[in-house]
Image (cartoon, rainbow, N blue to C red; front, side, top):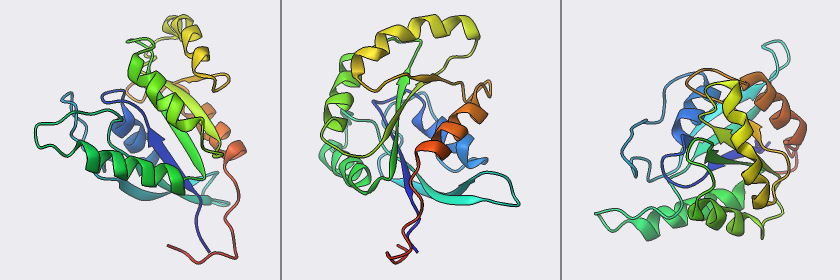
Length: 178
């Protein structure tokens, strides 16, 4: 049975790998302040719900959309991102609430408009409740109500998981596991 896939996308340095590790419950992806550390897709098995009744899914981290790197791998990174988005059952579109809305955020939103996959807009780096007031500008991305989280401060993890559980389709028993 094919597991549903939750794919994390966004521009460079919004905290995609931090959210990946946070949701996975362990350090898997490399986290660094330098843009472009994540180039390939990184995946792990994760679950929603409690240990008595888990709902499994594959969690996938991707590189930053629009990254320009010195090794000229931008096209390869972009292909990896597009492949992950095409295979996704649910997409976590991550933005940085401290930076505010950036042109690359709008580019990511534009690419997501053509997919039929459900999307959750995740405003990361909301380390304290007052910063959530800055989130209004992200409504322009056309993804409904965003959720403010902080992977570093462990803010709103349960709310994000509940939203993921609500929006993630059930595993398709007619498809073989990948």
